[in-house]
Length: 638
Image (cartoon, rainbow, N blue to C red):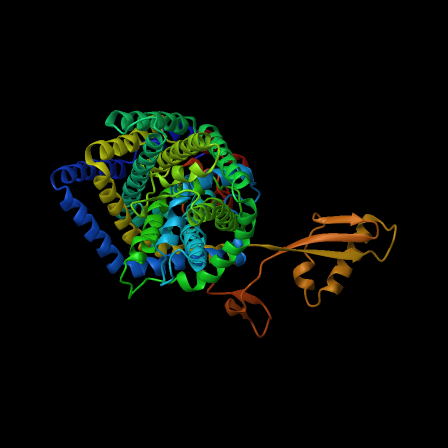
């Protein structure tokens, strides 16, 4: 059995130290890739850009079809987990309530998940698909508008959040219910067993997750800084320079360090709430000052376009495509979302303790999809309308520039400067929330899955993200950023296989949990003798209960009256029971005794951990632990 609470507190400090087989290799790989990318970008120049293009083509041609299949597998499993009996399982102890309120929970998961991308592509992507429309639709037509918004939602709707849901659900279940450390490796324990998960295989999985997460955040950091500088140049406030880049990155990194040190319940929660509020204010301003009536009409139409285009496009891999559109957009997005899955999924898991699986999946899938639909309708449809009517030209040399399209869009409004400043503020805050949540996730992985990590290592990872972005932008330039982004997407290939195995692994664990999950039945009877003595009344009641349940007298006659509630002439008793599959029940023909055989074995049973996560889990209680033995220090510390 696990250590006592007193012993645990004494040993908790050692539990939060770095895990050297993960921390050291991950740091070495990160620095090596940074140095190699910068050197090649400086020496090779155009050659590196060509090599990056060839690698992108190799990924889309070689494994693009697999990315398309994999993301649909993840979404299908997520929906199955939600609608089946599995959805009743709570991510924590049976009597736990959610750790965060619904609003704070949603703000944090959305800010970490794709908030910065929504700002970066809010105008650029819908307009790009309108100008260069896929699937053979004629560009710059009404059909192009409908196709554009449907495709945008394909990339930003249910599918990416289905990926995040699988990772987040698996980690929350394994940690908060079964008491495992909060690390990606434990998703595979039901398949591989504890010994392999704690060995080199587990170390390799977490190392890949750290590298992919850090470079994913760093490259997004770099592209976002480029957009901020593009906005400053567009307004005529500054010109791009290395010092400006370093200053912006340093300021954002300092805020991120403060937030990650203060923890989830303080800095990150406050920043996420404030950030989403400012973003909502920006969207509302555009909605009110823009084509309001048209946007109201566009919202249901965009929803219809998304739902109608989804069955056809969700499996579209473009085997005969000649323009490379699928490779440049859909397959790129699937690889990018999968490469971000360890980071976002693990962070969502960290903030989702106490929710049922059904609440978790419905919230993770539907709420962000709805907000994305509203956001892209407001910005995307307004931008397309302004471009069609000639209100403002958002094309640069006949193409859409992601760094300046948003600020060109604001020229159509009377408060151009104000809206641009608010947009840059939102970008900065989204970067901060992405950086500090990414640093927190990386630190937990590098500490063996502990949720109570040292502040020094949190500072290390947050600073390294800023340094990586600065080095890539200042020394390597956009070529280095693109090359590193391509490498991050390449890590999605092995990780997608890990996630498919995780779906199978989790299904095994969930099935046992469902099989052992009790159901409850309330039996209501009317007493035959009014005003009788307690003993007689109990006997009468039990007799009535047994007559109402044919053939169950042997099973029910031993029930105590502890669960009874007497209301007037009625007696109510709640009975706990568990459904047994007839396939595993054998009836003795002579005695009628029922024996359960070949029942599925719990692949996670019997394991103990000397960690705060284990002592606050349902597994600890199931193994006989005391309810007051839970140590909630892992919540408050982070």
